[in-house]
Image (cartoon, rainbow, N blue to C red; front, side, top):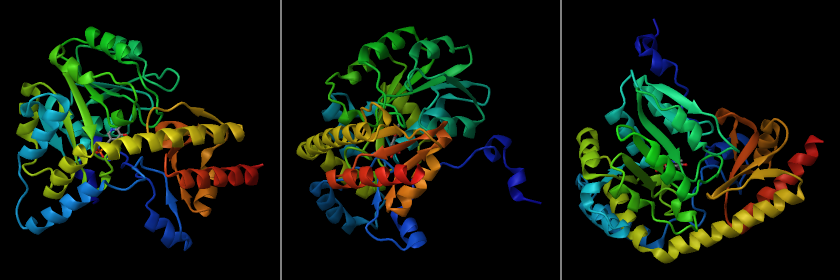
Length: 365
Ligand SMILES: *Cc1c(COP(=O)(O)O)cnc(C)c1O
């Protein structure tokens, strides 16, 4: 007997999340060095120096459990977004908070709405509960909020919206999101996933909506613009009531002490975030120009990655890029078998990727 047969059917039916290929794995496989990884939307600058210094200091206290309430980080975040600490829930990455939200509000009889081409973690946490995923068709690769509204039923408990969206990089205007919020019944939780918000130049403050929409939850992360993906730290902003509920099922020490101190330091390093944003903006332009020269179309992106249409099954191009030491992200598992998602790297990394792409396309002719 296979012990997995005893597992819940909704769990055995799950496909494990596919992470981008690690550099070490490609090194082992191909014996290459000088590999560049443009798969997971990480910050190519490396972490802020002040975050690294904070980690060195805190490493002396590793024998202690972390502050289970994350007092200092919540205080710093509260000041940053002008809310109170009791509106903040910290997670082991924002993925942790996304899962807490699903486990708090959704049962196996309920429905969760998200878009076609939505972030892979939404179907994962929905199916892990055994709830029904209701998928709204995309419009121009982005979220179609009208289509989502029409799918709301008595059973809908949660709606996930990523803005900007991953893996497509599409973004909704704040006005569109607010019109949508007005139409959603208060009994349905709307999760606005803002993992890439620091890269958007739009200065609109979505946090202000929390006062008017008690069913709104905003999630953010230190994994992208703050350059701390390895430490796993993210958070949600919500009403104190929702935060209180999430806190009941949260693992007591879900955010480790190095992550807590590094996040406080990274949040304070505004120059680093601004430098990251500018580097990203230049990198996106570089890709757009490069793709146009190669005759490829792409999905205009507001994130720190760009998704390109290679006009054939993308796997052969992906493989050719691997052979050239460039790791990008195939997204066939998102239903986009002809696209590759490329994270914006340093200028020279982007150039190497574009050069490798040119060679890959030529090999294919
Ligand atoms: C990267 C990403 C996250 C962040 O995940 P962490 O768990 O915080 O590393 C969340 N949502 C989306 C849409 C993302 O692309």
